[in-house]
Figure (cartoon, rainbow, N blue to C red):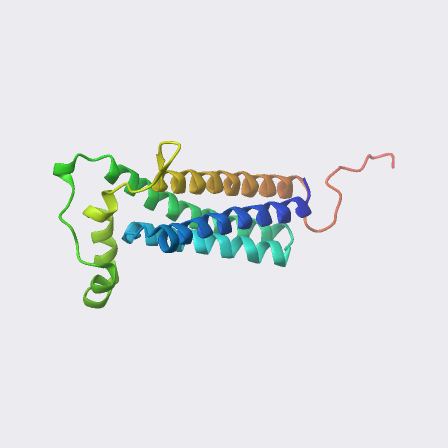
Amino acid sequence: MSLACSRSLFFMAFIAGALAMGVSYYLEYAVGLRPCGLCLVQRFCLALLTGVCLMASVHGPGRIGNVLYWLFSLCCSLAGTVTAWRQVLLQSLPAEQVAACSTHLADLLANSPWLSVVQQMFKGAADCVEISWTLFDLSLTEWSLLLFVAMMILAVYQSLRLVWTGYQRPLSGESSHRAFAGD
């Protein structure tokens, strides 16, 4: 697989991220679903992932740049996976164990330090537990988790593949094959 293939994979990852962002905005503004704090964190991670993939597909870097772009996309995917996984766990809790309804996210950000806001979002609230939309019996959060896990697997595979081929083929332009003594 050449670096051009890596560039097209970045473009396909960008298209997948842009479609997912479009669906989330459609569900918010056209259907009327209100995103919770964890949904907004997932959307932010998806926007970062989509931006990294767009930059990589436009930039078309060499081997080291590709590895760095895949590692950046891995970080974005990992953050989104953790956030989506926490929300899936919160949605599977019984109603008695759900935290009391918190204040709106904008009020929290205005009155509290950002670290306590993040901690409060990950503790969960009644709006993060509510499942208001499903497709094929999977909630929007579970679809988000699937997308982030798929992007994470792609980033890990591509990073390892590029590092492995770089290990086998030196950057200096030298041949990786040993010369025969008789040549």
